[in-house]
Image (tube, rainbow over all chains, first blue to last red; front, side, top):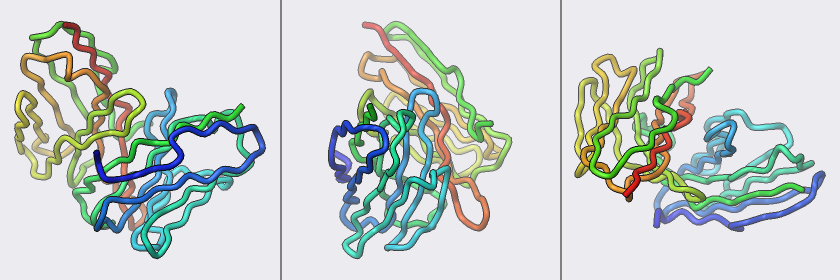
Length: 115
Length: 113
């Protein structure tokens, strides 16, 4: 158990809908990262928050947004969902957001299926 | 274009065999991490290498960071079925004043009993 929790475990929704994925980092970790993993694209970095502020941004679509709250939990919002958004979404956390060692601890993931 | 190229993409071996998987880049990384991921689960951190030429051992797993810090390898001795999984290398890629966590596509390893 990494100490990172994600809810829900599974999510099935229709195209055009909006969903929210939730993540709680390990106790003491200040950074949260969001990733999308699909068979054809591998593990793709979406966005990082550090202590409530956006720190780095990857290939995140404009339809997707995230935030980190004062208690350090984070939410990833996906809107106007398309079939191609079906994937595993992982949250990870690390102690800092600036360490070059970048050791991350991953949650169990949310499997999103868009029908 | 992948910043971190992993090879081979797939590997299927018998229990007891040795194997090496590789992670290569044309860019210098300040560190590289290796993770193992099992189907439907999140990646689990195995090791971080920081110094060029560094070698780290984790039981039957040996990790090496290239002298130029552009490549790394993972060697498994006497593989066991429990080693089955997707092995990912990752590192912080400096871009636009921040570090972007970058992952390779992984090597999918199956160890048959």
